Length: 75
Image (cartoon, rainbow, N blue to C red; front, top):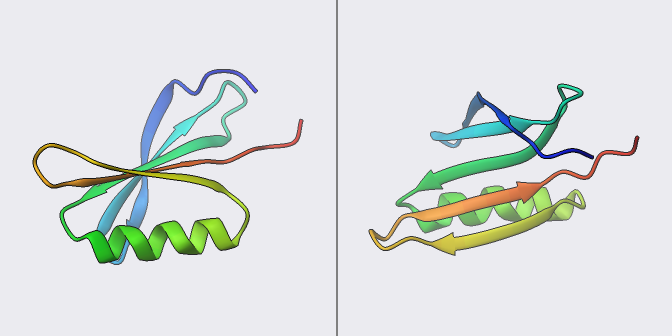
């Protein structure tokens, strides 16, 4: 899988904007979401982890929580 470079808005989940970075094949490779409400990010992260995706949560300096999920695609 190549480096994901193209970013586009994927949609909203529980009021949180989710962005997808697409790989060269046009498939979503990495998802990003940022919100001040930790519980919303936690809910999205748990749903993705339960589906087998790798999920990383990180707190930013302003109290925002960044969610990054890596989607592993078989080639």
